[in-house]
Image 1: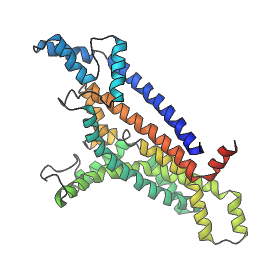
Image 2: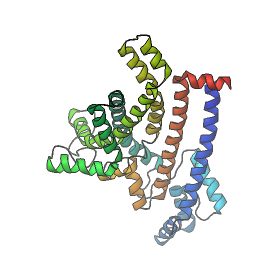
Image 3: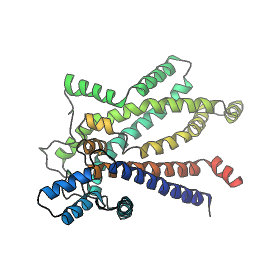
Image 4: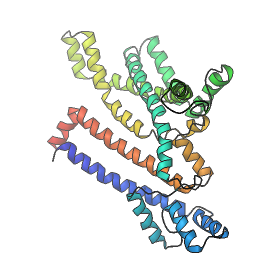
Length: 335
């Protein structure tokens, strides 16, 4: 078995265990929330004239397990539903499977957060190299200061500042929603333009909030590489500065690819406050509203989806780093 195959098998095994642990914790949290939402729904259905058997079956559809069974029976039914990708139905969206609710919300989260993350990564990496090379000059100081300031400002503060500036003081962008309801959904200029217009502020917020971390991480990585022996040897041999610069950037960016993969894994769960401020109907917004509406089936599904995305990102990051860095492969093969 190759190195990558062994690592993949190990990661998948650990990932399954972690998903099982999170699913178990989520199940027991839902079962122990004050007020017992399953019992409340069960009693409400009976009060509405439904028979106990029919009410129990209806609640099973909503939560994925029988509310009147033993705790072990409920738990095994819950895990069985997870294997079938049956997470029950939303309480607030009658008749809508939780999987469909999560899929609809996730599509509104992935594209804006992905665009903001990649934009901040590209700009942060490029400026991080200059911040390290020019670290003794005014340009390096200015870049480091801006990176530190933006890295220290919470996402929701940046979001509110952008709303005040570009939606209130200079009202050129919408401050809420994902698209103007006046446009017919479809592949047409008006609808697509409205989508882009509403996504500008969330994307810029994601980009600015992540930019500081990328520029500081890249600067630190470049400074470390500058002290390596191969850079000194290249300078002594008279290698052109442009070639040395490419060597520096290529070696310094390797650790950041791992961080990028992990950041992409956090896409689904990292937008809670931003989506709430912009009333953007993504997964973060859905998670908050499901808590407020006591829609525990959706809430449990959202936690699981975020967990799975994070685990997959860790697997991809580790495998990607193994592929792009020959030192990791040679080190593990030698051991």
